[in-house]
Image (cartoon, rainbow, N blue to C red):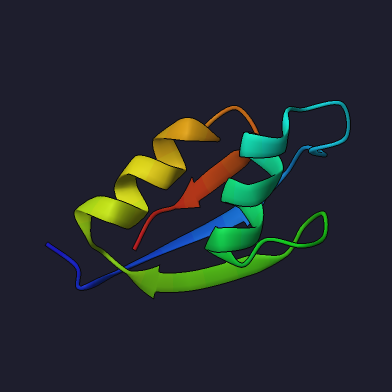
Length: 60
């Protein structure tokens, strides 16, 4: 199992709730098609699950 997880924002957060906007910002996703790599922790996995309809997880 990988130590990091990489994901990309593929849909806009416009029209979403403030919680969704805050989650995207917390993950480091501020623009469309931005890709970030984070340490694979339960906290990050939970945030990713919250916005799974807006992101694409890259396979390692």
